[in-house]
Image 1 (cartoon, rainbow, N blue to C red):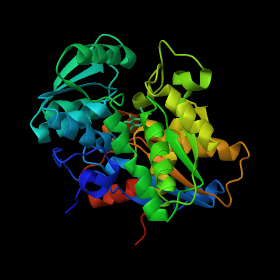
Image 2 (cartoon, protein in one colour):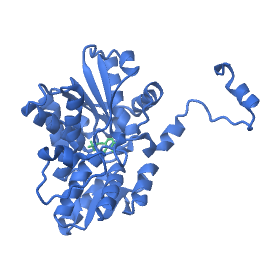
Image 3 (spheres, rainbow, N blue to C red):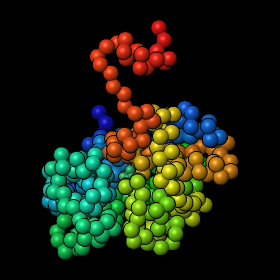
Image 4 (cartoon, helix red, strand yellow):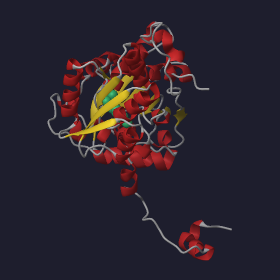
Length: 354
Ligand SMILES: *Cc1c(COP(=O)(O)O)cnc(C)c1O
């Protein structure tokens, strides 16, 4: 049985004797080594951390289990979040498991269908806000200030605590920290959490070194790279369509302390990486997740030498979250045939050998 993060990493989390040991089997996600992409782009060793294998299909579950357990401990009966999709799916799942009421605020018309269907299936109250994610988060913060409810966005420090456990897992699997960690950046909670996790592990001597943190924002939604909030962020990668990140300053700290960088990738680069991951590695992720791999490709093409580097890319969410993108990018049109083996053989043609 999968024991979950609170049992496995309780010593490193803000738990007390009264914290319920909530678990849906989150964490302990696969770290798989690249079969072909790493070679193609001249990388010593390239790994993918498959966070889409978490119970609600994204890394958000790592932080949510801690935030919801702490909400229960505090005696709250309602949890609230604003979300581009995955936070609402995760909050709704853990809210259901914990027997709490979940209210989610989503930007109207901007949330992928898979994610919305999850929040609905788990029984959350879903309120579509006439505005973007940043506007929804402002509303959520105001409500949490005035009412007795738990805000479970990553401005809740328990979310960051839970999410840092992914850094611990990478160190356990590799035996040490990697040279570089490539990660998509939206609200910037995750890059903050990984950096915290790596630093804690190094100071406890569970790792001998720290990775360079390489964050990537989508070009049309890159406030940290541009140095100012973006009023109307645009990108196909809806999970990182955020114009005013809540964890902006801690992302800069992660970048600067690690000697890393936060850069942009275009939607075309994101979609190229999304296709390559699926077709060369068999990994189906959502577009935002592919920003990490797009970042590796961009750096490699730009002349960075990774030939003796160990690199980990965080694959933040599952491709089923946003199936419309996959269908729109299909390399062959879907073909049709009557139910006749000869006719199908004729269509498949040369690829069919006896
Ligand atoms: C939330 C999310 C991100 C962005 O993470 P931040 O902590 O907001 O920077 C990236 N990818 C996916 C799939 C997400 O759900």
